[in-house]
Each structure stands twice: as C-alpha cells, then as structure tokens.
Image (cartoon, rainbow, N blue to C red):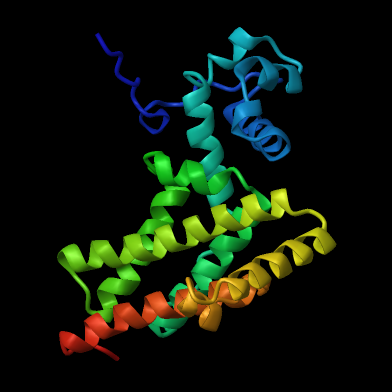
Length: 235
C-alpha cells in the first residue's frame, strides 16, 4: 500500500518558540545548506548539525525534509520583489517580475526544479501567483487561456534558469566554453548538407544568456498579446 504524503506544512501551526530553535531559524539554515550542497546535500541530520541541535528537536517545528523544502522555497521566493504599483502596462510589469525571478533562481540554483515539482502554497509563492493571474486578467485573459499564459511564462523562466544554472556549473572556464562553442559551430558548418537550416541560422557561439532570455521572453509575450488581439482586448 502506498503511503500518502502528510498534510502540507502550511496547514499546521508553528509550535511556540524555544530560545535556541524556531521554524524561521531552521529555514534560514536550510537555505544556506541548499545553496552550498543542493537538494541532495540536505538531510535532517546535516541540518541539525548546522544548527548545533539534536535531530529530533527539529521535528517539533517541521514534519520532515519535505516540509523543510517547502518552507525553503517560499523563503527564497520572497526575494522576488513584487511591483509596488498596478500602473505599469501588463507586458512591462510581467517582464520586470520575470527578470527578477530569473535573478533569484540564479542565486539559488536548486530553486527552479523545486518550484516546478512542488505545490507552491506558501504565502510568498501565492502572492506572486496572484500577481501573475491578476496582471493577465486585467489585460483581458480569462479561463483556460489565462491559466495557459501563466504556465507558459512560469515554465519559460524556470526552464531557462535551470538550463542556465546547469550550463554555468558545467562550464566554469570561459576559455573552455568558448572553445566548445567554436567546435560545435564548426561541426555544424562541416555538415551543412545534412543541417542546412542550422548552418544558416544557429548561433552556437552565442553566450549572451541575458540577451537570449530577453528575446525568448519577448517571443512568449508576443504570443500572449496576439491572443489578446484576436479577442479584441489588446491594449
């Protein structure tokens, strides 16, 4: 018989604080450990050691590793600053938010995968979801198209950041990266008859992650705007 996951941490109240431990302190330590070691390096034992506490004492504040990961995600998501005004055009507001999201995901490379695979029910995560839905709803989207647009933007930034993090982790030497890109571009050119379109258009030597991200985001937003124009609601 399969075991169901216990109720999410967001549905349980935090116990009274003790002098040395609190859920807040546990989460801060977990984020630091995740930044240093990644998800594979996080265990309740290692977290307790970082806090100079007993493992069992952590369970008075969290149900286990899954709770810690949920709390750590929401703690870091809080660093994605929300706009302070609704006066911005929808494209500009979303662009600013997604650029900030990528920046935070670059600082915490473990974040994109966890955001894509966990229920984001923390207060900071829900506030940012509310922002995306509200911005696109004001622009004129609703129903399945609204949900699809939010998903397209969310998964674009998460996927891009995950790819970028992996690449930068693999290619820490700029000279090695430039040489690999040069070799790849040369290989495609040598097989132009087999890959004529790649030879003509692919820029495997382009290492401008910022520019690529901006252009890709613009392409996704253009698609959303085309949907709005087709429904007679484009600004």
